[in-house]
Image (cartoon, rainbow, N blue to C red; front, side, top):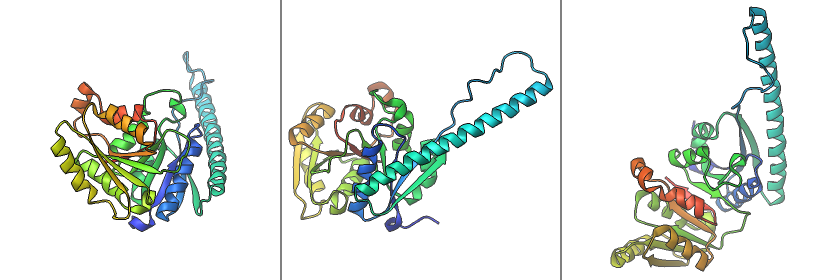
Length: 287
């Protein structure tokens, strides 16, 4: 049975990469803000065969049996070693979370890909926190395919972490009136998620009157005690948003993620993908 909204958890997905501690730190922050438990999760993937086994040549029936037995044995050893490494990493990060003031922390490791596991777990998740680039993509600009699939397919808030933890003081909502950006607005509008820090509503549009009308309507959604700054911008959307972020020292950008038209993305590129590649601060994405 699916848990109620109040019983859902913050899930910090870690893989031992350099961003793992930061992913945990943001998970601790969100669990405090929302008053719910934190879980640390690692997906153990088996994506390669043992390299020392020689498959070449013609094998007799007995040799095939011996080869199969050796393969199974080595796969079992590899699986146990991976599980032990995963458990050790998770327990070390749990210790770190407790040192940062986390009250309830559970560790979970499962076999398989990240996306497939999150799909199974989604009914009990409130927010998913992921490092923008995992261990296999450290030092690269592109986002990992599994992370992109999670963002595209799971209709859950996903916080993409790309730097060491810094408690948010100002949060920007990149708002264009679309359904996904409305979800981002609603997620960030109430006080619990980020506290009563400033919310900056930003819209990029060539028609100033339309832009101001959108922002006026959006401002009404945000809780009354929270300071709201609205700004209409004109120009190239990504550059304008990131320039605003730098000027106003925004700590998190919230926005809707990925449109429905993949053929347009293939021609023009995805706004979300470009923001993931260029943003210097974490992104809270909603679908």
